[in-house]
Length: 65
Image (cartoon, rainbow, N blue to C red):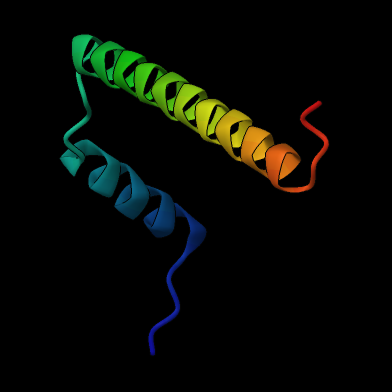
């Protein structure tokens, strides 16, 4: 296996970086908002499930007085 010089390594890295298809600013913003909204929906869903299950457990154990 041939050893690569540091200078050649940097050139190869720059070449690979130039091949990357970066997301546009608009795509990044849309993806960020989508993730935030979906995380909020999931958090609210699990909050609701937790509250319902908590009430059921309290009723079963007779603590729902």
